[in-house]
Image 1 (spheres, rainbow, N blue to C red):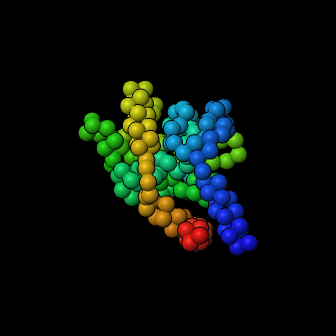
Image 2 (spheres, rainbow, N blue to C red; image 1 turned 60 degrees about the vertical axis):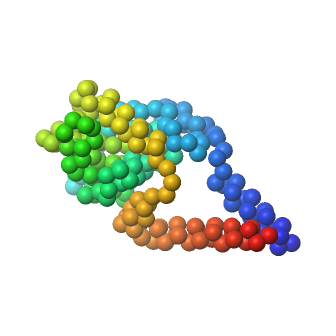
Image 3 (cartoon, rainbow, N blue to C red; image 1 turned 135 degrees about the vertical axis):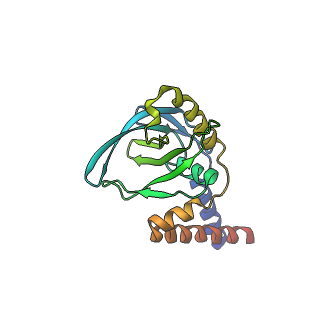
Length: 198
């Protein structure tokens, strides 16, 4: 009986994390979920934030059909190191991560990068807002949009393996959530050890 329970649990555990594909929508965009991190579409949008009670709108580059709405945050961390600042919009408990003075392109210009993401019912995307040395919204300049979208697409597509981003992020944002994630991971490891014993 123990053998049957362990085998059933293992199948259940691995079934939850297998690379099955399915179709879902992100806003008006059709996405196919898979273990590959290939987003179907990049779209420009406007994002309005409440910061200290004031409403501010920026151009936002959105990457739909990613594996995780935090993909841009993670690839910025993996590529450029830890963020310099955080900003909490008044209507969110999750921060926008900010990297300052980053040379994104080979043009000797340093940018400030605001990385964010949204996951809610019916929509999911990872997003970025970029400002130049004069604090101007670079996505209002057509000439820069194409080169920056290619740059971020390359970063997201080559994202692989483990990253210490999630530990640093969740310990800052919600340490209790990080502890829960660790307990879940340990339970999965223990189940794997039981299966290997058989």
